[in-house]
Image (cartoon, rainbow, N blue to C red; front, side, top):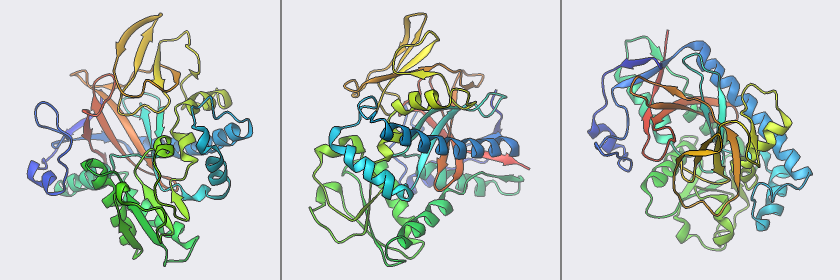
Length: 363
């Protein structure tokens, strides 16, 4: 069982004041406001170690894919292959941040990689701001967090800027209009850059012109959809095209081929496996288009809009569960290094209605 600690709750007014209004379940709740998931120092360190190790494995996996021209297996659009190759060779240090989704890590369960949200990861406001605010509301309890995400990403912006024009680089931030969660995420990232006295601007993707005077562009928009978008041309993309390799769930099969003895990896293949497995599409998001199969029988399935993509087959793993049979998944953020963790809980297939729950480390 996960170790849950009752805390002084944030109010709905606090959350609404931060703009956190897009995610509500049937009860009108969207965050576990009165509990922390307690982890130990050793568990926090284990999450950090897992994030750092897995990132190195992804770099090795991308090198293998490029060397062996395996783009089709990962469902990569042909129009992006040259851009992926170029960015991986010359823009490797432009990956701003990503989020590893992991099972285990608490309740004596081993940490296992579920997937890597390397291109357009959200849960940023919740992980950076909300769980830290919850900690501040409960000061005096001897609690701390593994949560250096704001600092790590802010420093990464400086490192990126210094590659070009020192601190005089111009950053453009974009997302599509009308999706509140994505707007808040992008605005938080822009705030991180501003905190380092960098020059920033924001434009909706729909407003971007063919040529614009920016040195770097961060767009919260999937790379796999970029061939259908004729947007702005800037010198360098943040979270460059090669992050699409990391985003593809086909990389899970590549990593298992390269590192079959890794304690962090589940058996994964481009073909169905004998074990109980989870069938995922290469670029599915938020729990959509998932099948769980055991002994050849479909036991659980979700619909979605990603059925056009190829599939990958990953060994099933039992998530941490509480007494009400809610499933818990860790999210470890990476920006130049593993820099923080937060959790989601929900149904066996975690979807966009799962709850965010913060964590704390008890001294």
